[in-house]
Length: 578
Image 1: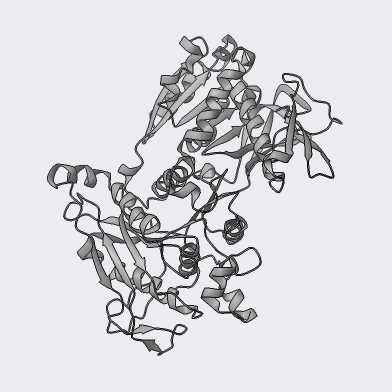
Image 2: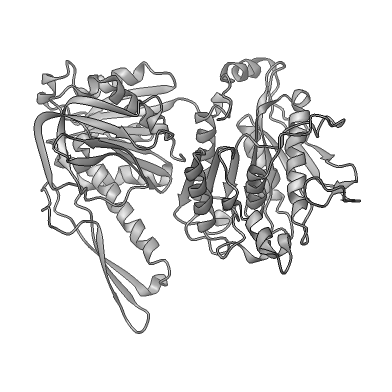
């Protein structure tokens, strides 16, 4: 577990008053002073060469305070270094958010696999040894890498040591374990889905099976691997997204904090280091670091939460001032959240552009008046989820809410396009069959979304996509008790929640839920009669997320329960990139 540090927000605000906002001139330093190691750790073999770091420190760091730092590993297939956009450009971005950026010019391996690792490890040790001089927090030293530089960063995150306490060199005494890792379209494996050029440049023409395994970093993940954020486009050709998925799955198996942002497009390099996909991983990283207390709090700012409620009169049976207002009143008391409560009968139904444009999270409660919000309004919300990183938190019967339906339609479309990514766009046609909403589907009916395909000899593929119904085959409103089981205690949604908890009265549903396969199932709800359903689910949608929290009923005081309120609070703190 990573050490957590006190927020730097006050320090940074104070620094703005007393320090000029002028960044220090970057300083380029040698790591080895001309005698650089060549072999595996412990080897005495050296060469007359050097690696370098360029130290970019953020402006306005007051005396007596410290900042996080990130060692930056540019890509280049282990045959070159892209030090511009994947090096100094990243340092400038980090500096703008109060984080030091240390650009590493590592030696190219030419078949000597331990050479880049030695340089990355030395860079991390150097940052820690120079922490006081550079005003860096030695407990917040991470590493970021792109493409082959992502392989180097993942190598540093899985092949590290605690330093040599007996060394006379102050740098060698330091640990080489990064406190966090950020891998952007990384090469991870030396296996079949890796990058052949990087593999040859690193390991040589005929590497042994042992060497292939040692530098297939998904096989080297342990419980000591630091928290890791990964970002990768699903259409990356040179370095398939399977690399990131392998590492992410390995982290999950070992209980390592890990987030994988699957970007809908952008290829390798994410559209040339610009545009919404490039912006998405950067904003996601900043929020993720802030959630782990690994970034200046000033980088994130308060989460802007818009709580929407149709405010039907039946809510008065359980809530003095309507359910949405009760939730908003709780959220307003929590630090780091800026909350506004709206309702269906407000101007523009409470979801006008000025309100949505100033929201990071939309919490939605609706029940009997769902259909009054038209599909075009739902699509407007989906655009903000997909393109701007809005997080939609759909509560209870919001599975039939217009924005939830439109979000699930959008996800179903994206899933189909991914399933047929091998078909040339000009040869693929997709016909959509709308679902019949506001009607419970039959238990023996076909689960939606579903797709049928026809392939033709000329390569054409016709797909019929049956859009999701967004409902379940049975429900009861007699207010029976339930038990909620948290499936993933490490998930941010589960922060501060017990492993299981009970609700004295809730509405009962039954699986299956007619929605696209979720990316994560965090909580299940179970009943005495043996029925159950996936109570809390998460879908990634472009830059944003959709979170479904299903227990509840407007006439049951579900959201007087402290645990349920904590669950909603956690959902409001989830960033798009997590």
